[in-house]
Image 1 (cartoon, rainbow, N blue to C red):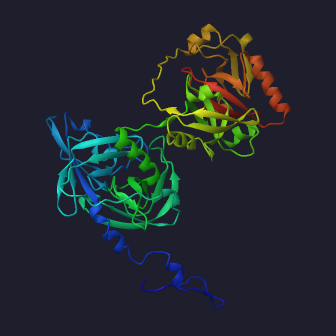
Image 2: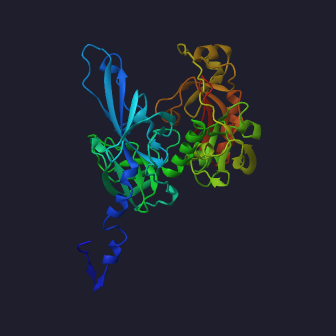
Image 3: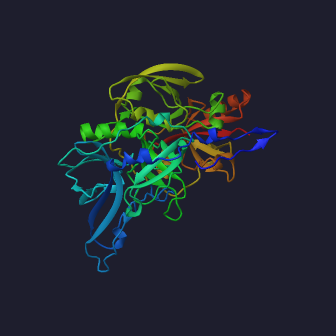
Length: 477
């Protein structure tokens, strides 16, 4: 480094040359040994119909994180005839025999995939060994005439905010491009999938970097570049990579089985907010609140119940709702796991034998008829809600399933605390403070008990017409 900045205060240096030594003067030696293992990936796909059938790219539609940077489309066919679409991305070799990791969205729907190496060699992908849309990873196979240069995964859990990282990829078709930055954040949830746990970096990542590696300064892959936030399509210093510890698990399963085999508990969970924590007597909001337990699931077999708060799983603390699916998915199928939970103010331990996550879940359709008020004599007004017994007429009126039991909400006062929690007419109060209710009087008596105990909010377990459950903490005054 040519010069150092020294600030003096009372004759004492606050920032010295040694302060800069923690950052690399040059990454040339690291990059030089890695570039041969990083590849450019080009794909072609034949689309039928108009440009409206063109893929919109990866990621959740409508999300601000939809800037997944791989598509470069040919001019659309004005006649609506079949046309070719080209796509560029990146990848890296993990086995000299010809195994290559990239993003699922780079190769999804491709008719042909060509791997371009730095020495000019081109190899056609002979097989997609497996792909996983949920983590946006894919494993490809080529047949090289000689062993390929391969790189290894490192431990992403050791990366700290501020650690230097290096990205190599194919931005805008410019193969072998090297950029340097730092880890800006870890464990980022960008709403791209159920297992979000991204590393964030300010190393420049652009269109075409998809699927390329993010290295630590030891030349190990600690992330797979996947997404950026960008209003222009170019890098603004906010990029995301799948951590290597997550990628290794997925890649190993794709290699072994051709598919992912994730652990399954069988619970629907939600975050423990400050209000919910207060209503449960928790000193701080943590854990995953169980809203629903699937029948015949591992959780049901172990005795886990709705309104339980899962605090630890296999010895690891569950800080929030998102932490539980990641922990369960990473657990070996058939493993017996200790789970600590909170139930009605008491901690308890159960053992769960983890099952395999079903790939498809069926959703039931429900219709909702025009709303009509219940007779005044049957109504009770509490918490800004008008509630009534769940009669057959009200079931038909709101399209409420036969298996749902509780007290139906028929009116929500505008601007009330309940309305602000998105409570709606047709929702059914199943439990109040973890006690089942069947009549409006049950709700009233539970509410009086909460107020007598001096609690500022009451915890309601609500069901929609389809039977989907969620907890809501409503202020008592």
